[in-house]
Image 1 (cartoon, rainbow, N blue to C red):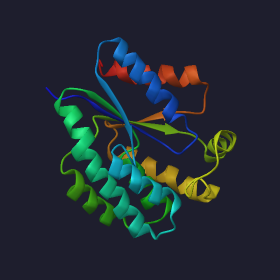
Image 2 (cartoon, rainbow, N blue to C red):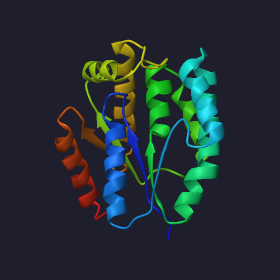
Image 3 (tube, helix red, strand yellow):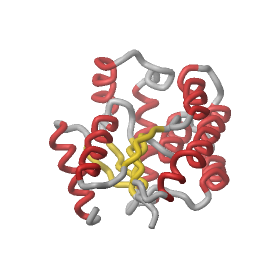
Length: 203
């Protein structure tokens, strides 16, 4: 029996990373084996590609190709082996982010992204994607207090509004898989919403 694949989506500053760690601890306390990973990244090669994507100037097509190249390596060497072992994989972003950032934010051709998705992933999709939805201005305030901005985080509020709309489209297309979490509240409030989603699926 394969493991579960749960992804955490949303713009930086929405609180994804905090809640990935919390859910990992929660599941481990119940006896589950949990792998925490991220995209772009998760393998040595994918982490090298991540540095390029986050910091090197490039056009949207190059950006998308690098993201999917990193994803291919990540799937082959980290995600698929963990799922085959029966582990639960918690991943900070996956393909929904590509459609949101490169598709929505950059305005790149969604049909091309969909083709790359099929080539790279086949039928593989997360079992659950938690979309941490938050007003971009609130997220920007949180990011500014946390760390220096990378190439994406330096974008203006209009860019992040388009990213948010891109996530909304993915949620509309797959409402069973992509669950919107209102991430604007306090940490405990958001955590309760996550547990409600897990409980509703008897996970």
